[in-house]
Image (cartoon, rainbow, N blue to C red; front, side):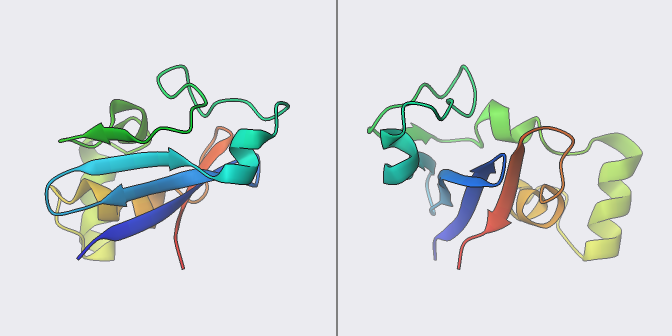
Length: 106
């Protein structure tokens, strides 16, 4: 079963990150893409109507995850498998220091 996350930039829905059984997919949301005043979420994801595909969680999103002791603490407290990067992203990247936030898509 696919998992889907909403990706926000400065509280604006920018796109969707999807985990399938075999890959990860990122695609910009149409209204965000069409607004020339809205920036790309990162240099590695230039605004494009194409989907981005990867066998692994994209480094940009992986970089939003905690490491070391904080990773262990979060996984234990939230009951998340340490290797389930997508669930970790959904549960811990809602209040980031930067402009990007990840929320579970409804």
